[in-house]
Length: 262
Picture 1 (cartoon, rainbow, N blue to C red):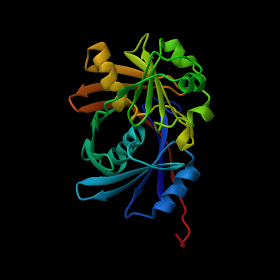
Picture 2: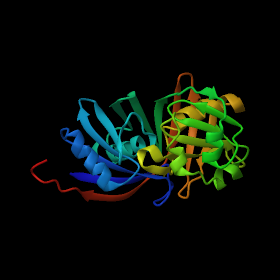
Picture 3: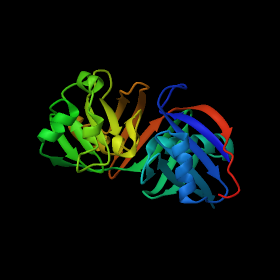
Picture 4: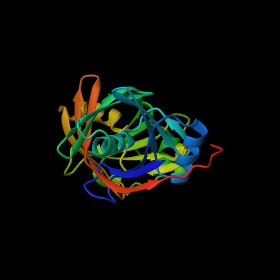
């Protein structure tokens, strides 16, 4: 099986968020896709199979399949548009989150995703203890979203991952603040998926974009995720949809050897 590793939301390799990409002729079993994701040990490995004019796309973390992943979608689009569908600048994916489309303009890959609304939560002692800081606001969507006072607070945050894992709600934990040089900054933690920190999380921006569009009263923004690798996300709110754009860099192309029993 051909296997690619692409750094998404990256200007060059070793930045952004690495994703594994496997382009298949036919589906393999879920258990085998899960084993491959565990062996790759990246935050996500994407599997895609062509279906007429689109591709079915699934995402697996080392701990299980998820319903939406932005950076692995960008990485898959990069592979397809550069190596499989070179006569077009658009690729459409059929996913657990519906139809997702990626457009290439020059070296930017723009994804069209559903906007994710959030509901406000009361801040609890458990939240403060796990984060190691008192947030200004707490919100819930698929994840828990915490608004901090400053970019410095986001950058220097050292949460207790074991305590984040004990939160009764939320798949992941997002922290965000107004940026000093960007519209907003963020970090994303997913210890429940065996991913302590996701370097640049596209799906997190599905909730971050509507939140900051409302706070900043603007629909087009540029965001930065403040992980060690860091990455820049071009953001746009369009009604019930968000658009995320970023660059990508190919790190490797390899081959996965599967035994006949699979």
